[in-house]
Image 1 (tube, rainbow, N blue to C red):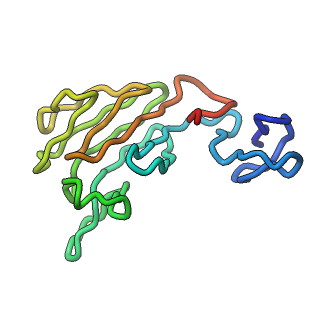
Image 2 (image 1 turned 180 degrees about the horizontal axis):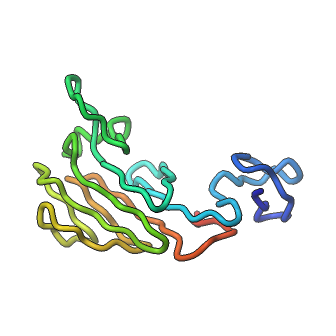
Amino acid sequence: MIKCPSCRHNEPNGTLFCSECGAEIFNVIPEGVNEVVLEFLDTGKRLRLKENREYTIGRMGKTQALIPDVDLSQYGAFQKGVSRLHAIMKTYTGKGTLVDLDSANGTRINGEQLTAYVETPLKNGDTITLGSFKILLHISEAKVTAKLCQA
């Protein structure tokens, strides 16, 4: 169940708006669930990921056989220099790691260039830059029951 942040009414998981007061609740994390949210800074769009997983991040190519788990094509990734298989992100409770896959335009965390194939720690609030594509990382530090991404 998801609890509305405005009126505290309980709604089923996956509900977008509260049936009692109409408040937006699609960014509310269900009780007992840990999540990671990637916020694309140029568009404000958000992508929710599950913890304790490994994700490849990149963009689709026309003849590409391998598809990244997180495909940034629809967000202008090609124009911003994101490689087809740019990086690997591992998510854990309260933290994560990022590995640059020797991408053409590099990967940075909070402005610091990563060395290819070296696992680098991530934490809540980090800014990840793939080429010139910027992502703000929201990652829960414990089981959460409120909004993870505050507007």
